[in-house]
Length: 125
Image 1 (cartoon, rainbow, N blue to C red):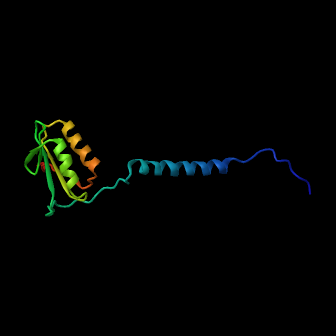
Image 2 (cartoon, one colour):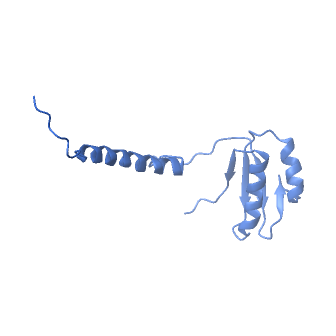
Image 3 (cartoon, rainbow, N blue to C red):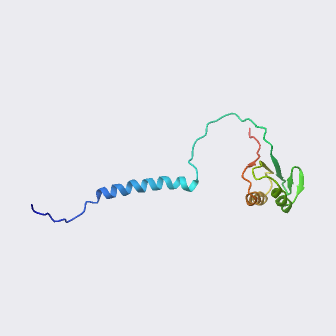
């Protein structure tokens, strides 16, 4: 039996495998980056649930209110340290207030460790 010389490598199967792997990596990279898979949620009528919540309001001139009592940001931090971390927090911000006040409040809530934070809005007609 005579040996044939091995002159070249057929790289077509290798390229096919690499393209499949590249497609998989690109498809999963978008899920990793966003953290969630985008889905279209079903529609339903809105119904309120009676959940005990702590309300923090921001007026148009940047004054913070904890349960309708005026407080500053340092007082909020001391109040938040006394609360349980799984408490429900509802933020009510005036649409004329600057985003800076809202950002300060959200940063403080994140720093203290609250995860159940809701932003209250009006239902548009």
